Image 1 (cartoon, rainbow, N blue to C red):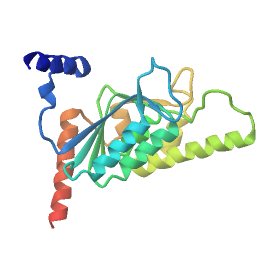
Image 2: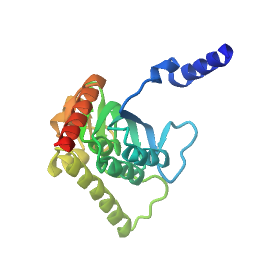
Image 3: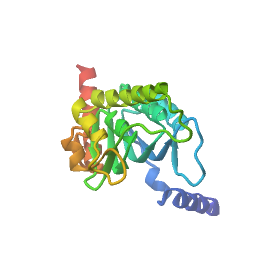
Image 4: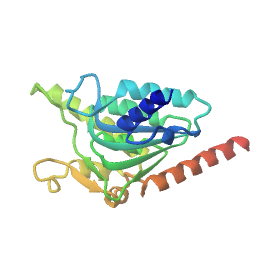
Length: 228
């Protein structure tokens, strides 16, 4: 029995970098991580670290349905990825009835921006970055007018979502997205910590302590509202 328990502990250390009892507690808060590339309909190569949208979507539905879960903390360190998959996750986040708080650590780039703004309240670490740029497509692209129309409509979906779920004005989002003087070999803008807040994309600079405190505050406000 002792040997079996030691194997379980070792497995948890290997998988999570911590002892198993760090997870052995009751909490009304659910934690969700979105890391690496957001993987959509196309499977990425094994060397890529990905967040698969078909795994995230059922978790979000379960969070909404589980009466024991009172709030959700979303931790992001993503380089972006599939636009439609990212928007699908973001729309679910934005329409949860329970309080949600997002925390950008490291990076919340590209489609990671809507994922961050989708929460009820958003934080970004002082050292974290966000890259905003126009829609891209890999592989063969047909150089015809309908292709450019499709790009424009897809980009419009992203812009509208960001404006709807953040404090950023449309003019600011479009200016940052299409800037040509910020990135050496690309179009777009890189924003660090406080700059993302100043642009209105993120609500506040902070870390885990601040994010959890705010989430508990939002949970308390919703509970008080229901009791009234």
